[in-house]
Length: 235
Image (cartoon, rainbow, N blue to C red; front, top):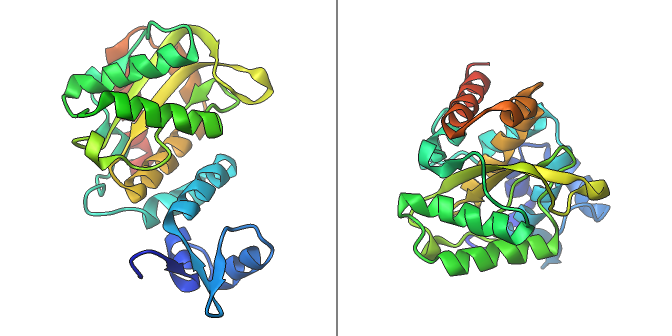
């Protein structure tokens, strides 16, 4: 693969889809790309941003393909969410009543690991991402994250999770309220997509979101997430 661009063949492998299918989508303007010297070329950052939005509508099978094609040596753990989450980065309840205070609190929770080197820069990047388009879904869950990896601000990839005692406006479709938050902080785009795909699969599991809402404390919530992550691996 070239250093800065995907070719059509490389993009097809990256997405785990047939080259002819990808070419049709590109020619219809469904995938961001440009022709350079007669050949389609795709910038990795543009593809990551496009794929983030596409994955909202993906099935479990489609998410599993994205998860597999973005697996690297660093994120090869069979249970990727459990590998990046810890009891200390789960806060239930999360004491926050506004979107800004949720993001500030989640960055503080992540900072318990001592792996957040530039919390102000990280918070600003997360807020900038939210300003582009909210990361809230229509079932009361949001997955805030920076638009691009910030390896200089972060010692290692991680996830922080919190649940507020009541829902707050976070930009969800149809003005729905949000009370469950997964802050995803990754040092590279492939790990980022891998984690988003895995979280998407978890959130599609019947009863999982309800179980998160009913968990009484941080330890119970952490155990529930890790158990669900392991079940996906075993299944």
